[in-house]
Length: 92
Ligand SMILES: [Ca+2]
Image (cartoon, rainbow, N blue to C red):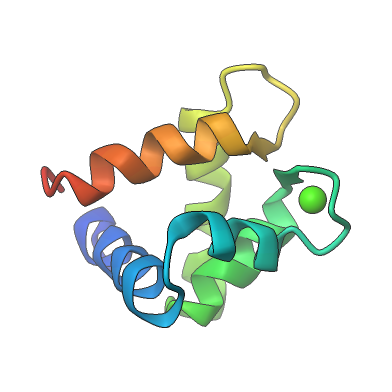
């Protein structure tokens, strides 16, 4: 079972190396351009980061549960940015 730390590290690499900045990644994975990432869109992000199929589903669910402050079952840019900021600060 991949640890949360390993998953977050993969996300960090994706956001900083594959994409120039997190906002570009967010827009790329927001396929329907509604300004937020659904579980399905987040799962795609995790898969692209190299997180395995089953794990990415579980992790996407956990991330939304933990980060979705507005409780709409999606991550908007503000919620996503907050998570990314603490991730890039390197305390993961
Ligand atoms: Ca969306």
